[in-house]
Amino acid sequence: MIPRPFELHSPDTISEAISLLKSKKDSKILAGGQSLVPLMKLRLVSPANLVDLRRIPGLSYIKEAKGHLLIGSMTTHNEVATSSLVNKKCMTLSETASQIGDQQVRNRGTIGGTICHADPAGDIPAAAVALDAELKVAGPRRRRVIKAKDFFEDILTTSLRREEILTEVKVPVLPPKSGGAYLKLGRGASDLATVGVAAVITLDKAGACKDARLGLAGVGSTPIRATRAEDVLKGQKLSDGLVAEAGEKASEMSNPSSDIRGSAEYKREMVKVYVRRAIGQSLRRI
Amino acid sequence: MVFLSSPRQIDLTVNGQKYSGRAEPRTLLSYFLRDELGLTGTHIGCIVGKCGACTVILNGKAVKSCLLFASQAEGSEILTVEGLAKGSQLHPIQEAFWEHHGLQCGYCTPGMLMATYDLLKRNPNPSEAEIREGITGNLCMCTGYVNIVKAVKAAAEKMASSPKIGSGELTRRAGKRKSASRPSS
View 1 (cartoon, rainbow over the protein chains, first blue to last red):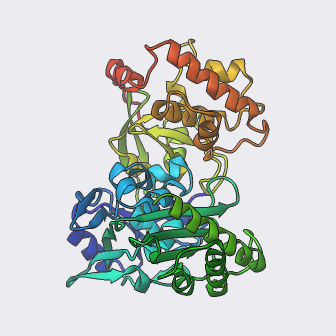
View 2: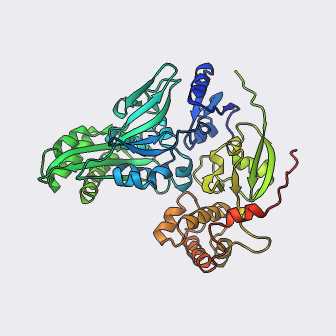
C-alpha cells in the first residue's frame, strides 16, 4: 500500500515549521511516523503536506531540572525506556515507554508524536495524565503550556491548534517514598493497550497512602484519570480490600467500547484486575 | 487539489556501498530499497508495520523500512540482509538459522535476521524471554517460533566464541567498501 502523493517539508527550525503549518492548510506534522505512516498507507489520512520535525535540532533530549524531567518531543520511546535518569526518577514513565509497540517501533516513535496522535489506547497518554505531565507548545504568536488533563479531548483529538507544535513534555519527578508502574494487557506482540494502567503511589512517614495517581488506557475516548479510585486510597493504610475497591471505582469511571480487542464488559473487568496489580507493583517498588 | 509531488534524488549508504536513487516523497524506504536499488532481500509482508519482514538497520538501529519514507533516510547508513554474509560465507546468525531450521517458507527470514542482529548487538547473551521480546516486532506464520528462538540462542553462542564478528562489524565493513553509485534509471 502506497500513500497518496504529498509534499514533504523538512524545516530546520520550529518557526519555519510553524510558518509551513500556517501557509499549507492541508498539512500534518510528521514526528516518528509510526502511527501516521500506517494511516497514510491505508489512505485513512491523506494530507497534501507533511512537515517533518526530524531535522529541527534540539527537540530530542532528556534532562532534569527543578524536580522535573524535561523530555524533548522528538525523543524516541527507546531513548525514554532505556534512560537511567527516567528509570530512577519516574519508573512509571520508563515502564510505559518500554511496553510501546516493539523494538523497531520504539526506535522511531516519539513521545511527542504519540501524545499528539492521542489514540485512547496509546500507552504514553495514560501515563501523561497519571503523572500530571505538562506539555510545552510552540505556536505562531506565543508559547504555552497545556496540562495533560486538558490536552486529550476525544479520540485522536487534542486541544493543540492546527499551527501549534508540541516541543517538550515536562513530568514531575516522583516524590520520596513513591513507587510507580505501568501494566498493560495487550493482544500479544506490538499492539496498543486493551487495558493499560499507569500508577504512582506515594506513602507518608507512617506508611499510609499520601498520594495516588492512576491513568487508564484503552477504556474511553481519551485516557482517563481514575480520580475516584485515587480518593479511595488517599490518606488510608492500604489493604487488599481498599486496593480492590479502587479497582472497582476505576472500572466504574471507565467507558470502554467493544472492539477487536475485547468486549466492553471484559475490559471493565480487566480494569479492576490491572488497577489492583498496578497498585501492588507500585507498592512493592517503594 | 492534486499535489504532484515530484521525485527527488536520495543518496545513502547501504551495506557499506554508496547509492543514489530517485524517490517521490511518498515512496517508502522498503520500496526504494527493492525497486530503485534492486535490493530485494528486504521483504514487504503487511501494510501496517506489524510483520517486521522489512526490518533493516538504519544508523545502527532496527527499524521497519515500510514505516518511513525513503527521503527521510537521505544520508543515512543502512544494513540490509544482503549485507550480512561476506561473499559465500554466511553471517553466524544466518548459519544458526540454517542449522536450526529457523524458518519454513522463509518470507519473514530477512526481517527476523535483522531483528536478531539488532538484539544480539544490544544483548549478546539473551535469555529465551529476552529473545522472544526482541523479536516481538517480527511475525512468522509458519514455525511457531520454537526453532527461531533456538537459532537466535545458537547465533549468540557462535558470536560469543568468534570475537571478530561483533558489534563493530558494520562500521568496520563500511570503511572498507568502495563507493559505487548505481546509475539511476
